[in-house]
Length: 348
Image (tube, rainbow, N blue to C red; front, side, top):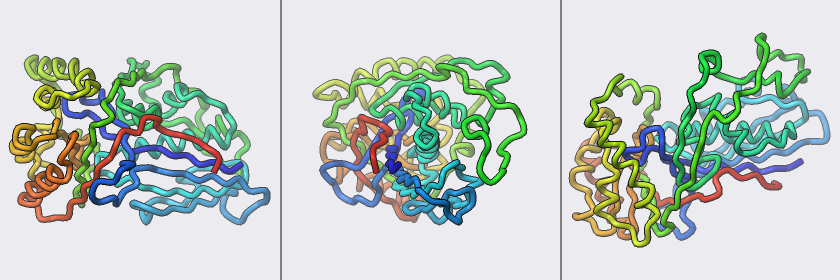
């Protein structure tokens, strides 16, 4: 069995849709400017016909973004019952707000589905993914593709306390005699999360500005308040109700989209973690830069997402210039486009 798993990067929130909206993205088919990142996590799986000397009959090879920090230790990464070689080719910048952890979770569950021959549907795979990482916006976009809205249903306290699915359920009698968990195992609840794919104008390009520093989502979440005012909650709810419709219209209405991408729930509290971001919101506007639709943090940051239909290089360089004034570090920028199919599995 030779298989190839491909999972796109994703940008979450899009301004007001905190923990709701997700946008699956991949490298543009018509290159605009620099093309450093493939924006895809790829796993190449080769099932061998003979035993190999690697621990637990599984050899892991890595290349691409952050590969020097990815563990090759099978016990910390994955375990298979059959002699297998897994080659990880990562084209998603790590800890930059581009869904690298969601892509890894989706790829891992798809890997288990293929090697274990489980024949799980994507909807059921969604449940398994959400038991590992409870960010349905990134997970939903990476798995299903396109522009998605998501939510999670309220789980029981017992389900909420679970943080992983021990491998012993899927892989009884593990090779090498390694026990992966002492507690009884259970399947995840059904329909943990729900998603809906919205229409998205395919003429819209996603400009991603990627700074040369990392920001963990957990650290960014610490900046958020425990409670919000009614005014701020209503502000975001109003914009969430219109943004999915506006992004599907042709031609897009720049003035409405720009206003609909404003946020009061997370970006104001995280702005100081990305020096220059406040200035970007103030000065890089649709009225000052024709073709621009709106600007937001990508996920928790530090990357910035700008949606545009033209003048992408001018817009990207304007954002980079403002960020560089605030912090003298290197910034990459790249134009990505919608990944409509999400995660895919084909014969490698």
